[in-house]
Image 1: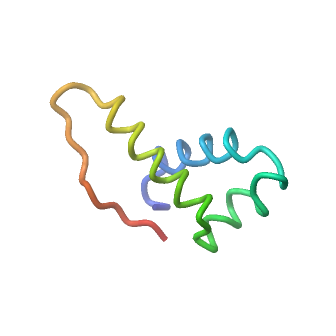
Image 2: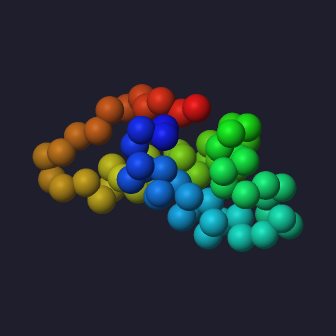
Length: 68
């Protein structure tokens, strides 16, 4: 996902909002991304859903994206 910087930034914002401390997630976003944690994957899925909801009318995004 590193090639889609807007989606990555959205996933980071969601991650930081949903997992604000070590009580919620054991690592920060960068480490979670590197390890592919469940918290990271949930944030990416939420970012994809948000992108589809916020897309201009008629614009479509692919169903499957690359997640590292």
